[in-house]
Image (cartoon, rainbow, N blue to C red; front, side, top):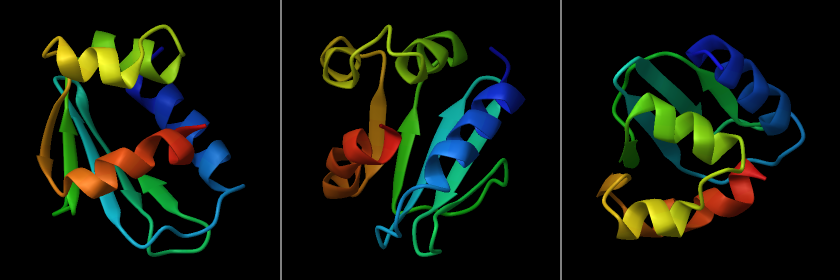
Length: 98
């Protein structure tokens, strides 16, 4: 998957969700995906802005995470996923991404 394909998949999923009151940025070595959870439904873009929570990981690991091949908690515990900012927002991500 490419960054654009993942962005489109996340836009489609976000269109079915309600706002969650936070901003989240996924930062990879191939670019960023930004979710504005203050919008209803949440807005997904490739804009690079300040976020309440930033999730940093290699693009290949991010693609596996989005594709369901990599568990978020496992990625975090093994150092493949790093979180900056509000950890509470990061905990919401599982329900947002499904």
